[in-house]
Length: 133
Image (cartoon, rainbow, N blue to C red):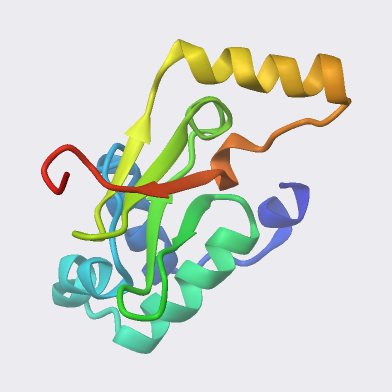
């Protein structure tokens, strides 16, 4: 994160981050982000480049949902990203949060019994949501 502080930030990037931060409980495609900031003069290519850079810098979570859907982005407040797992419905392609204490038990078990630290911000389960069962 230190290199992020030293990197030049553009007005366009600030608009993108502001939009995602203001909607931090929602996931957005690059096209949805573009639609939200286009009126401010941000180009589609700038949105795509900045989203990738911000994900690399850890400012955004990036969820790759497959070729037909593309990636979704979400502002990362680190507390939320570390504790929250996700699942993707393989039928309707929606991304859902799994805010459940059971998963903290799983993370704790993996750490204590297997010496493995699970990164919840990158953990995605695949299956069917209740609407698609």
